[in-house]
Amino acid sequence: ASHGCIRLTEDFAVRLWQLTKLGNRVIIAGNDVAPLEISHPQLFRQKPKPDTSLGTPAEPLKNAQATTGPAADGFIKPVKAVGMTVDSPEPAMTEQPAGAQPKPSAPRVEPVSIFISRKQQKLFVRQGYAPLFESAVTIRNADRPLGTHVFTAIERKENSDAMRWTVVSFPDAASSKIERVRIEPKGRHSGREAAKHAKLSPPTVERARAALERIEIPQEASDRIAELLSPKSSLIVSDQALSEETDSDTDFIVLVR
Image (cartoon, one colour):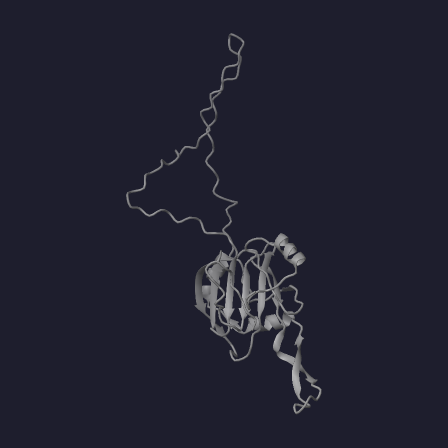
């Protein structure tokens, strides 16, 4: 196996294959992490859709002229319905002129992925693995780590344009305490100390909120994202640059170190 491979036990690999499908996001962490519910003004809101339930009242239908009485021979005459149309006729189909460009297809409804890099001071947006746009962002105290946080839109809140979000945050190694282990004397190298294990601080919602508060996104970029946002969309915040592992047929691949 190459250095980039991740080895799984056979039973877990089979279970993972059964639980996931193409396009699902998989998070691999060295410590136990779990999604936590979070709310914050910086988290994107879905742009309200125009209300089409109350349109202009339709024109009244003409009264149907029908004769349903029995004929002289005892049979019912067929109903002649002549009023089941509105006054305005249906517009006729027109041929496209030669060389005309076809109308653009309806926008995709696939979830979008947003990646914010502290190192690059940029925001990247993808939909269905296809890059859509990128934008510069401002990060306050850019010399301080933000951490790695994966925010996921779960569903739209009832009677609101806000979304329910969860976050998976990775333990912050920068502020962790290092446990130093005494190495037993062996030959001339004796009494050395080595950093053995880092006691990683458990992730908290407060740390994810603190990261969001330091990020300023241009209004134009926020508006474009609001138009695309749907459940299962994600926002990923990282200290790292966009990984070279991210390709034209992948979602954002984030390395935590």
